[in-house]
Image 1 (cartoon, rainbow, N blue to C red):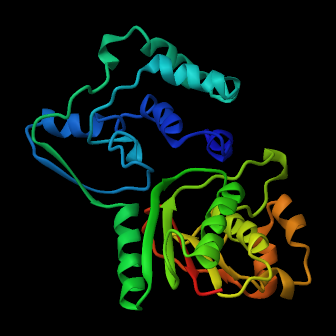
Image 2 (cartoon, rainbow, N blue to C red; image 1 turned 135 degrees about the horizontal axis):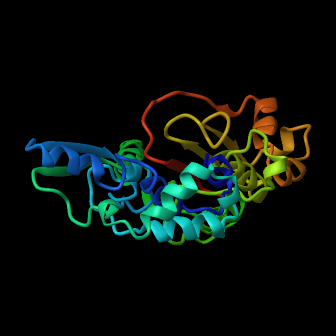
Length: 286
């Protein structure tokens, strides 16, 4: 039902989940309330795949409180121009819920419901940082809340990497720059293929550092699937030069996987655990 909305990369996950909450009997705290109303105790152990770790957004908050409204869900469906694609039964359900007291949201965490955040992007970045420090590198975690356009963010991050090489600011090499979050790719729905923000980030980075020595960049989605396709990619200053393909063409076409597959530089794995993206940039002396 929400595939066009989910694949619209300008749609924040909290907007998608606001809609989900109001067409579900479990989301938006309703599962927690159901358990609590029956006198039971519920302990929820949460892995966050949401930038900022808002417990009401992760998995649409089945055991947490919710501050959204049915009207917001209707407004969002209209805003993203998919109201007419929603089944009439769902439209009627949402419209009737605007005035229904029986459908009030769970505004407080129900009694005997306990939520614990046990894993998130920052924990993954800190683990990567520990590995880099054990290898003798200086490290900097730039952010766990990157949500920018992948190919644009790449220009900024590669600018920092080049600055480290050229002026030893803000750190002296060897350095590991580490970053996480959930990047986006903006594209036409009709032109979709095996797109992926991490692979697009790496391809844009490869163009920025082409010809440079001692900079390596890798990015992957922690669950092993980057948008649609393989987990991510790895590149250095020789990547663009040793490819027979036009890097800018494949960046503009959002076909980074084809570009990296041709070089055997795609990253492929399955983890079954999603805590968003991990980007690592290794910077050595110039």
